[in-house]
Length: 119
Image (cartoon, rainbow, N blue to C red):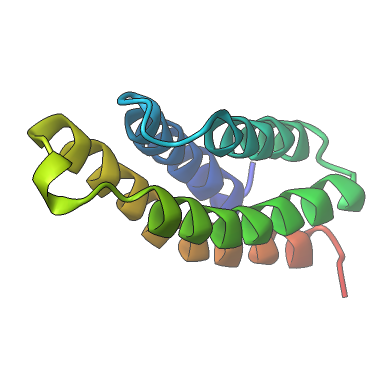
């Protein structure tokens, strides 16, 4: 495996833990969890299929789409200040941290796409 692939695997684990913690308080609808879990599954497929450019493109596209949907979910479902418990604050913090990590993941996936012969 290349160094970029190892980085993506490590970032993937962090991504999984963060979005899992973001889902733990049931503030966000199921579409938040399903969207992020689906992208994670496509990411695993992209790492395993070392000769497939389609898998990498799907993973990169999914990451970019979840950046947009995460922004929408966090902004729409952010609770009012008087209903913000410590657990909800922690969940939202983890969801925001996961969102901030996604551009780094997009860059690493793009590097892996270039290593595999993408234009």
